[in-house]
Each structure stands twice: as C-alpha cells, then as structure tokens.
Amino acid sequence: MDRLDELRLLTAILDTGSMAGAGRRLRLSASAVTRTLAALEERAGVRLLERTTRRVSPTGAGQRLAEQARRLLAEYEDALAEAAGEAAAPRGRLRVAAPLVFGRRHVAPIVTEFLTAQPAVTAELLLSDQSVDLIEDGIEVAVRIGTLAESSLVARRVGQLRRVVVASPDYLARHGTPVTPADLAAHETILFAGVTGVPCLAR
Image (cartoon, rainbow, N blue to C red; front, top):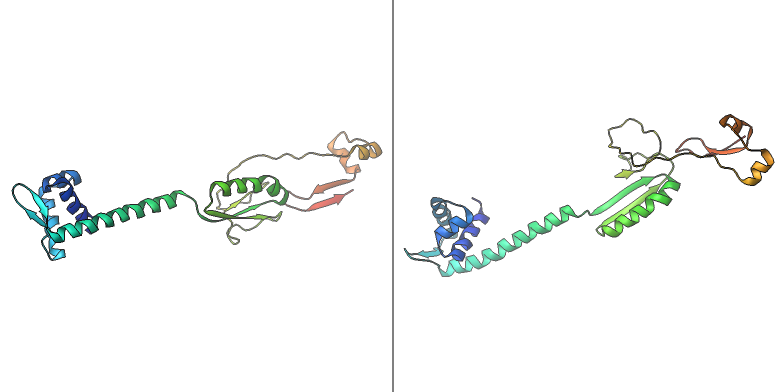
C-alpha cells in the first residue's frame, strides 16, 4: 500500500467512525487495516487514533494529519482530472502542408474551423506545389494529390479530383471545337506538366 492509500485509510476511519467501516469502504481486510494504520503511526512518530471497544477517535495529531490529508488527496484528484483533460484536449502546434490552389480553397477553411474548435492549438499551413518531406520539415498532416510514392507514412484517401478541358467561346470561334483528345494536339493549350508541377504553355 502506498503513502496516499495510508492517508485514504486514515480519513476513511474518521468518516465511518470505525476501522471495520473503513475496511469495507476501501475493500481491505481487518488485518490490512491494522497493519497499515500501525505503519502510518510509526512513520508519523505519534499516536493518531484512540481506539476503544466502542469507538475510534482521532488524537490531536491525528486530527491535524487528517485535515492535511483531505487537502492533499483533493489536490491529487484535481491534478489527475486536469491531466486527463489535457490528454483529451489537443494542444500545441500543428503543421499542415497542401498544394497551393487546393490548399487555399479547401484546406485553409478546414484549418480555420479546427482552430476555432480547439483554442489550445496553433497551426501553420504550408502551401506549395512542391512535394515537401514530412519528416524533415516537421509536417504532421499533408494533403497530396496524385499517386503516392512508397513510404512508411500512413495515408488515407479522402476524395477524388477530375481533370477537365476548358476553352473560352472566343477561342473556339477562332480555332474550332476539338472533338477527340487527339484534336488537342493542334490547339494552343495551357496545362500542368504534372499534378504537383508548374503550368506550361504548349502548342
């Protein structure tokens, strides 16, 4: 039995008015109650309880120790509850990486909403079309578009993007409307060389 349990026993004896009652509350045998109380009194160097066949009452030292024990036990329980609350509530800094345009339009609002719900968290949103190294750059979460390279990182698919070909009415009036993908070879196009690449102008 640890030292806090000894103090719990002392306060339980005074609360219940008997060693037997304290044993029932703490689920301890009579011998365990007697042994623990004796160890506490030996450590304190004074008698803490006056015991008769009919009642148990604290000595002056026992009463003072019990009062301090109640405060100590209450502070201990409060500290545990606070630690549990801190463990449940996120805190600290969160670094998020995402492609530039997609990140501005879709990721930034989500990060803002998350920060509103979690005031103990600060966030840094890194927007770039270059693939950053999550480990080297200290990134906790990254949004990637395209085929992922093999790695030990945990990935989860959250959506799907589709590519479309668009043109202005004026361009189509001057150059004609392509019918098949092969027709695009004869047109002026602006395209992305890769999902994470830079825009390129092609003819």
